Image (cartoon, rainbow over all chains, first blue to last red; front, side):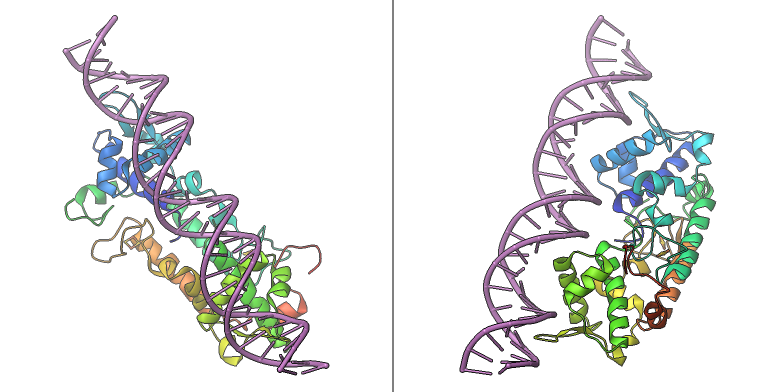
Length: 149
Length: 149
DNA sequence: ATAATAAAGGACAAAAAAGTCTTTTAATAT
DNA sequence: ATATTAAAAGACTTTTTTGTCCTTTATTAT
Ligand code: FES
Ligand code: FES
């Protein structure tokens, strides 16, 4: 695996896609999101449920329903998305898996890994869901590796 | 999960323990390692097999056998340990799981995540298996969170 | 009111990761 | 040579993650 779980990866791609759509004042359904971010549709549904329950995205049912963000969600941080799906272990856990990361009884990697985690946290706190809307609309950034889009 | 898989976490703790033992000119068996790093004994056996096949640690069978490092392995980098167990996805993979990380068609997080990965790589390349032997012998660093050490 | 739509929820299924157990192979001490 | 020791190897089980499918609930358009 990479840095995050598969679920979290789908979640990241999905929220940016929803952000871009909401920026263009469009709600989007699971199917459209899945097609645009290369994720299995029903599995993505489960992930969106979690994000919705955690207040990361909003949803409405019925015709013309779908997922969207208000200004409130647009200002959420990417770190909150990760935490909603993967928990906060990556932000606070010990590099070599000791039951808790401790200053008093540090593991060998403690000093150096504090820095890595801090950098990761800084970056994920600095990225809002709205941050890349302009570039995404202009097509300068990608949420998939497909032929089209 | 944390940054690495459970297997990789056990591997990291194990190699540092073996390094410390070899530094004191002692071979160590699976049981002793498992007891000292809080890992399930048979599962650790599997991990040590992989490390052995990948040339990270050496082993000898029979009475007084066990795992140990020569000067050659003492100079291996922690990044090699991680790669032997988890592969190199964490060092080269796209933050949001696109099939490949690409400069030409970057994902929104590309710029910032390059930095995180570079920092991670720099640190794991900078740590040799021998690096913490003195501190481990002195008991200043821990490989478990148990009552006794 | 009714039909159509789309997310929510729950029950499953498949695959991967984590963990266990038993047998085999190699080394050494007697 | 033989018994003993300890890792290697392989088959297996359990748990977690990933993914699917079907039913229910809420919303909207007619
Ligand atoms: S104790 Fe291991 S990272 Fe802090
Ligand atoms: S394209 Fe995503 S990190 Fe490089």
